[in-house]
Image (tube, rainbow, N blue to C red; front, side, top):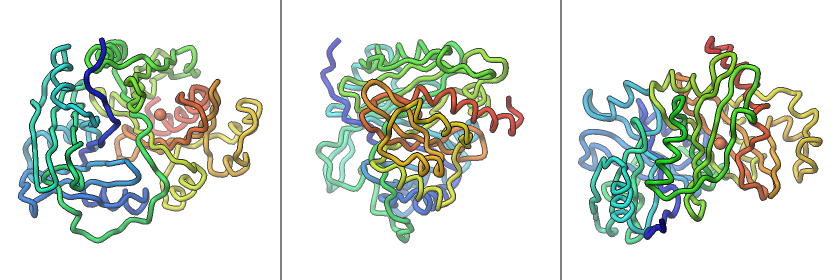
Length: 364
Ligand code: FE2
């Protein structure tokens, strides 16, 4: 079925946090984001405080509640800090919403037009699964900072300066066992997406844990979303650990694209970000696995950057530790040199490393 609307990319990721001010400090100081826009008591919003952080075309919307009740608290109480909404830019939010609902999506918020002196925006929201949502944002007629209702951030500029992050490359969803296929079907039926790339448990089985993964993408591939589920292993899959601590399905990680991963990871390490431990052995046979690279292997080894190659080229990537107390959400930094895939060859090397850390948490 042909789509009559276009997705233009990931407009923003809406992340609920316990303390929006401290979270904004972390993203500014450690990740080089700038505080871009604000909504709260001073703007007449009495239910919650929101800060938008910006770098390149990435927009992270952080929200904390101002009182004890309501959906933000319910989400935080159940899941802890986490992604509530992966919002898509579109040229027609009404059409996107109506065709999604007609094909079986649950309506969360009907299309609504909001405007201020900078123009108008149409927003509409559907449920993705469990407590995760997709909002369609049509802002082609809007020249304001973010969305109507937001103003310039009133606090001091604490940004340590851009670390080179450009766009959201992909967003990964963790489903419980048996829910991956239905969720992929949902994205195909409801959003007209296509199956883009697949990993099964033969690719990603370590001695203990494994997973299955199917990537969905929209037609022009500006939105790419791997959907995972746990697979049987001798011990608990890392996907199951996520589900256990997130309680429901949820967003596992967001990958942010850089044009220079060596510079980006160097800055993040200087700023104290903890990454997945990559074993030294990973680098011993790296050249045999991925061939000749533009980058100096010794530098990659020092920074613990991962590399994978496919028929189109190669990619470099690295994953942070979970960024909150619960072992749930984390970030990926990725640089693409031709490759359009997701680091299949790293899954095994990576999971062996993840399992060492899972064991240290007593969850293996
Ligand atoms: Fe990823």
